[in-house]
Length: 166
Image (cartoon, rainbow, N blue to C red; front, side, top):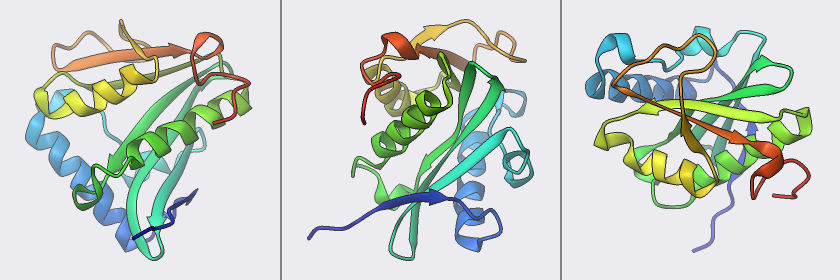
């Protein structure tokens, strides 16, 4: 059976989106110490420097992702989540490709992210590495944290970087 999934600006007042974000935060707090959880809640996603999208199949919200502008040349991947029931369908890659295309469109030279160091986050780290992200030190306002892995991608040199059609 073929399904169509669309990535659209996310509605942070939508109960389905709120549930997805609550599930995300629940997993983050269950996996990492509270001081090491950097996931954004709904209020953190509503600030002007953050753009938020969802991926849906019809009326079913399957995942979300956000892009935070650190400065005019540097963006941060935030709040990437695929609903547990929809994992293994390549939706994470679709969301990541969407953000990479948007970062290139905005003229960012670098895209960075913070994720957990625990095994729970291994699939995410593997996906990011597949797209050319490499481990780096803390960026923006982050500090060293044994529960965090920081990764970055120079967009000009990435296989999916600026100028590529994803």
